[in-house]
Length: 153
Image (cartoon, rainbow, N blue to C red; front, top):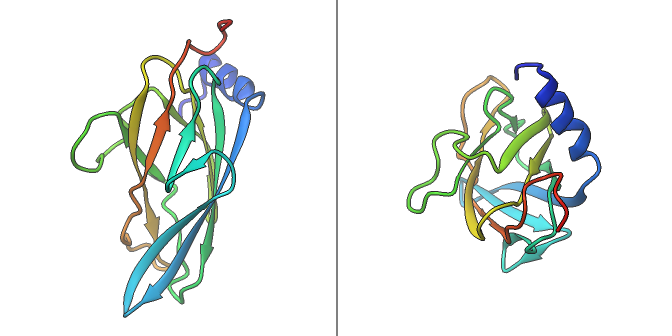
């Protein structure tokens, strides 16, 4: 990430917003990698659901690896996201999401949750212990929308 004044300001402001906690659980089922989410706050039918006009949210994904693959977030591209419908995104192609931090078992993003109500398709990316890409997880965030960050509602 380029270290600019704008990035530093967004990172500072993001610490002021509501928190969403999500456990990302990896298991082996019938010989295949199987993903599930345990959305602790702001969950609705398996989606992260951010209410309209609730402003930005800090979403913390915590990886629970119950496999012997030694999974970790792919720090070079831990999340792809898009407001486009259809297939899973192949890059971070929306200004609604900003990666704030990423290490092996924790990813923190900021969802600015502004503008029109929309579904954000996102993909969490992982690697195994030797750096090989693993099956991604591709759920949805429901953005209720609202005003841009820093503006009164």
